[in-house]
Image: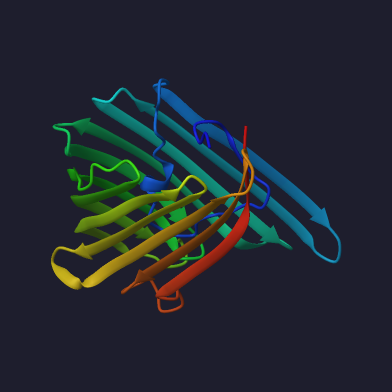
Length: 250
């Protein structure tokens, strides 16, 4: 199945996590150095409630084996009767430089906001090595060990709450292709504060893709996120989401 083309979700799957799962967005470049996709959804519903929703997703990638660039933009706003159920956005830029067959050096920058999690703005900048553990094309394993600077400002309703920290960002990722019809992609991130390892975030994303026909597949996606110290006690430490849908490629 060719995942280099635009993906259309007949049943949409959105990731709530505050950690961008970059691994699920990396696409094998084949002969094309540039790949990507863009989507824009706008909904306005009037019944017993006024419901408004707008979502924009963009992914652009450049890969020439030596250098790899990835840009992700993800915006999601959902309102009922003027009250926000979802209001979040993320912009992520990542660069990889191949050092050897098994080693790449990564640099990334990210900006985000999330009204539900009381994040007015969170900026990240990090760098570190990325190791390719397995050479088998059907069973790919990667390990990253990065250091990142984090600037976090709480939402406007929580004044004078700004944090500047150094965090680690360790991730393990694998892509499994046990048969021609089954794909499993999973990435787990562990991000502790350098000065206090008890202050950490853990995020995991796992996707199962089962090919039904040549261009049609069933997709199940599970996201899990845990923040040991969220901005306020009103924000749950643990969040998760399970979505199922159909994926059509052309």
